[in-house]
Length: 72
Image 1 (cartoon, helix red, strand yellow):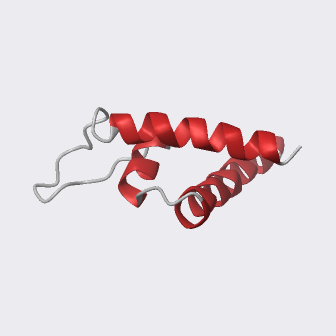
Image 2: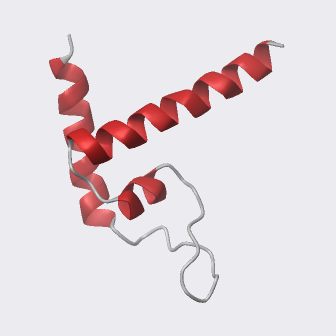
C-alpha cells in the first residue's frame, strides 16, 4: 500500500512540475519531458536523446530552484 502511495505522489508531483515549468516558467514541453526522464519518440520512433535540450534543461532546473526558493 505504501509503495502505491509513493508512486501516486511521485506521478502527481511530476504532473505539477510539468505544468508549472511550462505554463508559469515558459519552458518547452520537449525539454521538460527530457528532464523528467521520459521517453519521447521522434519521427522515426527511436528513443529520446538525453543530450537534446541540455542548455535549456540547465536553465530550467535553475529557474525551478529559484521558483521553489521564492515560495518560502
